[in-house]
Image (cartoon, rainbow, N blue to C red; front, top):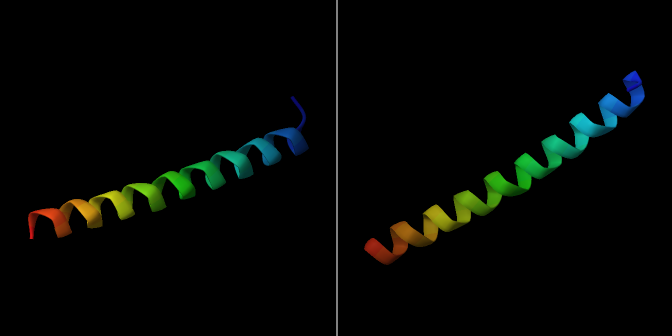
Length: 36
């Protein structure tokens, strides 16, 4: 694997992690609203 491919992979992983983090934050907020 070349360095450029690794960089692209890392960017995709970071983008995926960021989307997952946003979804988890939204789900957690909804859960707190449900409890509150």
